[in-house]
Length: 461
Picture 1 (cartoon, rainbow, N blue to C red):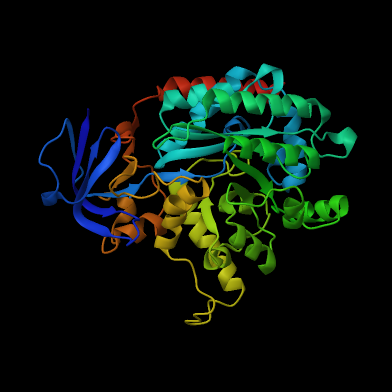
Picture 2: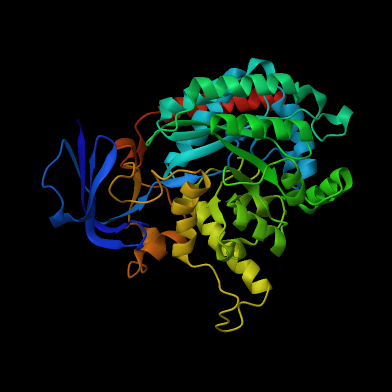
């Protein structure tokens, strides 16, 4: 039995059903789960470990719903800097084809270290190519060392260029092998218990990189084992055009055709969906991973997030791959989500003074996407808020810094509106991953050196 007492925080943002924000508050965590949340004088007076977080804001651990860890190895590749999605992929596929198992491990640790330093406690990753003997196991093992919760998506590509797909044939797999390995991973690693650190997701890459048969068979296998499904969908106008030309229908309708609509499914992006398609998501409880930085970086567009939220769709945030964002900063993604939603609203006329029919996203709404929203998208009821019975996952930021001067009349909004910062504490299941701004589970200088060496080797062939 172990206990952790957090006390004297300037404000605790619970994100519970009442959205309580507790001044001079804290938490009492026992055996990895929250037992008490409240004002400091209402909590037990002692514990095995005590953290006095005077002057800090405490948030639920942030939840990242879409990423490609391996892409930390190919940030700002010159030929891909100014390309749209399809050309960006064509440029990078040959580089990614050189990866080895150790590259998957190094990039996983790098991405998770970045995420932890930005307040993330649970991350979903979409690994969809496995060159030179690489396996999803490499990522899972590395994630356990870092100490964040991982939803490891067994991605796949089976439709190479020779068969009309986008990826080169060198990075696609046989569909029978994909399904066999998917079953192996579920049986080996998937843990659906409260507080689990590893869950497996089945995640064919996209409609333009796999066949309809693989989509259907993946859905059948996932439902047999009770695991979730994930893919990219409606990210760009090019993709919508491709889907119409290839399958005779828009992306969401194609998902319905291949049995990919349901509460066990979440899609990355969904930038180009209409009102009717948002209704399909809402009616069938599909989730969405909104990736604002990536969508802006690749000039993909601005997803209709406020419309989705208003319709009752579960929406979380994703930093997306570090070659299409070029970072893994969850607080930064919250900041970007709010600003992009406001830009979209302004372009549609919401900026005309006080038009309630065209609201703009608030700071607290953006934070909710990264906490409660992300938990709902990943199908988890044990994370996303700070309340008794939930996992002891939280992040804390010292408010006494230059970035927040003049903004402490509303510290919650300050975290979102002001320049994104690295966090001071990230605690997962009551165990520290970041303490006083430093990683406790990874030797960062050594990791940076190894990562840079691996990136140089990939780029130089």
